[in-house]
Amino acid sequence: MDDIRLLIDFGSTFTKVVAVDLDKVEVVAAARVPSTVESDITAGLGEALTKIEANTGIGDLEEREALACSSAGGGLRMVCAGFVPELTSKAANQAALGAGAKVIGCYSHKLTQQEIKEIEAASPDIVLLSGGTDGGDEQVIIHNAKMVSRTGNAVTNIIIAGNKTAYDEIRAIFSDNSKKVIYTRNVMPEIGVLDVAPCNREIRDLFMKNIIEAKGIARAKSIIKDVIMPTPSAVLEAAKLIADGCEGAAGFGELIVIDVGGATTDVHSIAQGKPTQADTIAAGLPEPYVKRTVEGDLGLKYNLDRLLELVKVRETPANFDAIVQGFHEGKLPQTEEECACHLLLSCLTTEVAMSRHAGRIEVVYGPAGERLVQYGKDLTRVKNVIGTGGPIIFSSKCREILQSVLFHEENPFVLKPKDPKFYIDEQYILYAVGLLSQVEPEKALSLARKYLKRI
Image 1 (cartoon, one colour):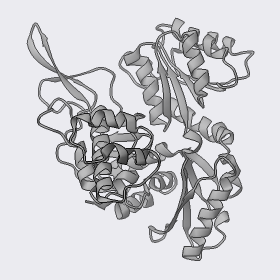
Image 2 (cartoon, helix red, strand yellow; image 1 turned 90 degrees about the horizontal axis):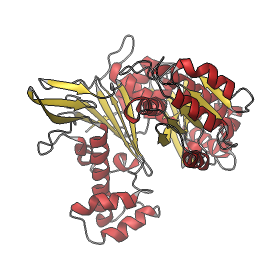
Image 3 (cartoon, helix red, strand yellow; image 1 turned 135 degrees about the horizontal axis):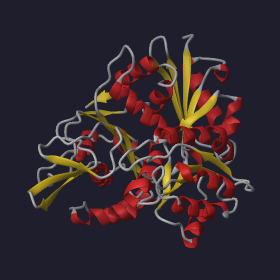
Image 4 (spheres, one colour; image 1 turned 60 degrees about the vertical axis):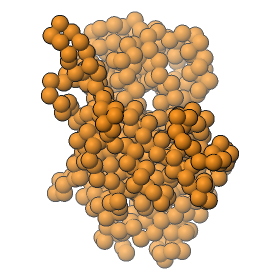
């Protein structure tokens, strides 16, 4: 085993390490230990590496070319501010999510003093300012730049991705300011045109160069090569590779990844999402081929109050409220009753997150009669759904949970998948596939094919 690659995920709760033999394209060892971000990140990492060595006999792990991602310290936390809610504000939000960020605030129009106080209280890693197409409105983004320039130390990193004609004035605003300000291309240079890739790159670059220092993760550089991206971004990279393939290897085709966690539920779709029904008009902001949404109110530990509201219309097992309170306190399901409650919550979370991510059809009446208008992605023909996250992976009824993503005839206006194949990330390796794809895409794809379990 001469060609071993270590792939690491610094999570807020657990630090995970996978050792992959690149010659055989197989996982030779894996370890998961509690993260030690708040004290010394290398302590938890060292414990995980010791377990890998004990299980494999591999030595000198510190010298290997390890790659890592991180969601520790709350992940990459961003605030977005734009002009029109359904245009530049939404485009900025998509840019942030596509870079693997957790959007903790999204604002439109001119920021108020109260909103600035909210942003300072949230202490985001990055504030992203957009607004105005190129040559369009300048006043909103200039106003917002002035407001943000007056914030204290809680706001240090700012990315400007709006109307380029406002940039000279914005540079003057920040000329005597200690904040780190980065200028990139407009996320919406024209009405209905998205250009989020340059902004994605700047967000990731800022994460690598500055933000991991602030979160204490940089200390791990004494052991590993680098932290190259946020964990959600690694999963998104894996989804793109698995869907599209790479030179010399075909992918699975269009797919959806649903990741159910304790605090949030993420949904990724790698799909065109164009209308499939005849005489349907696509409306609203163009949908990106690679799309990620994060449902911050859907998590099986920290957001149970919201789930209890949603579950009121369902029939629940006996002692449901008491059992759910146990989940909130960190208890894992063990008894038959507890497993039934956990399954119900997992299915509900998956169903609601998928319904929010998928597009919808609305019937509009005009002079020419009835028309169908599509907002968002049509995912009815997507043929692959991958489930990850503890509630799915460790459930004895993971297929039942994933079936919650399916299209329902009783609600035909929500464009969810109709007949997909189901897979689970049984070995928790999607993040590792995403990391490995940056240096060995063909082997990363082979790893996914080998370890994604069809159910």
